[in-house]
Image (cartoon, rainbow, N blue to C red; front, side, top):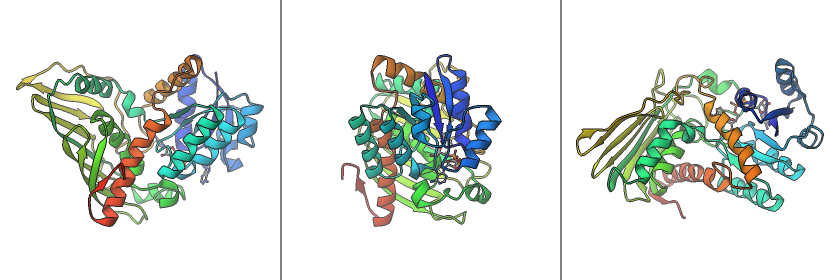
Length: 338
Ligand SMILES: NC(=O)c1ccc[n+]([C@@H]2O[C@H](COP(=O)([O-])OP(=O)(O)OC[C@H]3O[C@@H](n4cnc5c(N)ncnc54)[C@H](O)[C@@H]3O)[C@@H](O)[C@H]2O)c1
């Protein structure tokens, strides 16, 4: 199955690597709004360059288009790709507002095309195992579910592309860009958030968006918890996700289970080989999850089923994050359904 790449920046390297590592995927070519970016990427990797998304799909034969453009500019290329006849595999966040996400999902429905959201942390073995443990109710009634997301990004990182750290194209900061992987993970593991009370601030960078986002969450399953997301924590720490139930506790560190205790007794932990990475260096993280997303998209199309994380599922983490921002602005609790 042929995949086309839209957006020839940092994440495009991962998209190409994932396509090349997937036995039944083939690269159709690349398109970027800026022709020099597409040319540099195409020549570096010896792949065809296209001057529109339509030609990438219609002449290049791309059946799936991967979207790796700035976050607040996912809707337009995704729409063009679906209207040209391709399915879409889109980077996180799916878009930066719920309205833009809903418009993308509508186009998918109208054109009968699949939208897969890339949130690769969910695919890692430790996170999959954590989901199973929680689904089986092994911790008993959940009391607490917390996420500590302490990344480090330099001022130079934010200045490395004009869209970074802007509300319009990044949609937010520590929560919307970096924290989203883990905010998505914890909301998936805790079966969604009901309401949130948060404070967002910019304390260590010269940027429009927040570099600290602190929230208290009432999870739908009855548990309470906190989310702390920052890009100010030098040199960048492994993310911690912690669950405490009436029967025991489960601790994940950078997508690996580090502690699993039931009735005071340590349970066996399988050491996972794949970790998420990215907390210290935005260009150093595992490609394994992207490979799973590419493989899954091929199977979803062949079997005519939803991809691993369909549009409505990728929407959930954005809903929680924009609710945190709204809560910070109004200085009070926000219910997600509102
Ligand atoms: N899944 C992950 O772990 C992960 C990691 C990094 C980035 N991402 C996501 O990938 C997307 C791209 O991030 P990146 O770091 O590759 O960005 P980047 O700036 O390195 O690359 C973006 C590319 O899009 C092009 N572009 C298209 N339209 C543009 C516009 N209107 N304005 C500016 N540039 C435009 C740029 O020329 C550039 O080549 C973002 O949504 C980001 O959140 C995901």
